[in-house]
Image (cartoon, rainbow, N blue to C red; front, side, top):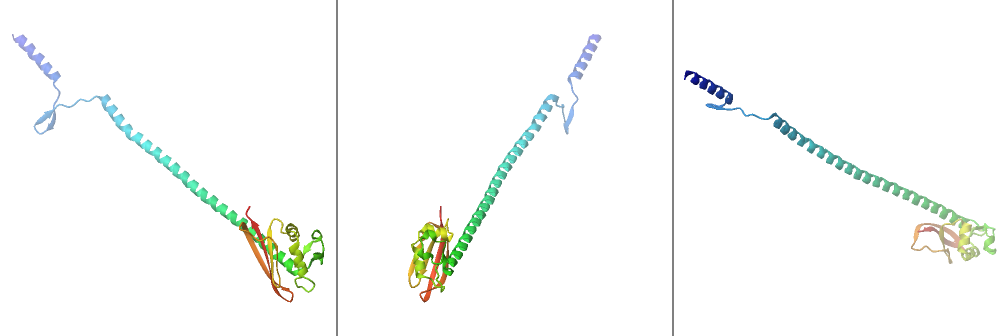
Length: 219
């Protein structure tokens, strides 16, 4: 009997020792067993949790780069359009100023030629218009000749432009004094640029006004 009892007690002691784990204090007057965790589970959870912020951050950076690219493109387009508009306006101003200067030059010198010279040949008013080389309206007394101004008004428009050097332009001549005489074509609503030059001359013993308008038309 003693041998059986000793064997039973020894077996019970071993079983109790193997199945029991050391208790850990969880607070005053209480004891708990330590929890067992799988190393694999902890590793996977930590890996999954760490990847989520990385993916979100990469997406945000990509979106920000795309927005910056689009904004930069629009700014470039706005600046480029503004610069080209300024260049175009400046170019138009240069062309306009050049045309106006050319008209001023022509109007001034042609009116001077008409009112201060006798033309060539000197008695051109008696010749066929194809024989006229220069048109001048004064006589030997530096007074406007009625015969010359009437001859000028009766010449064909294209021939007078050729002689006066106004090819490529249009003109309108107005003589307002003792007589009222016009030559050329009166400007119309399609006039683009127009320069007018006026001069005071002597005609039949009194003053008269000569006006020469040189202009261009819209194409």
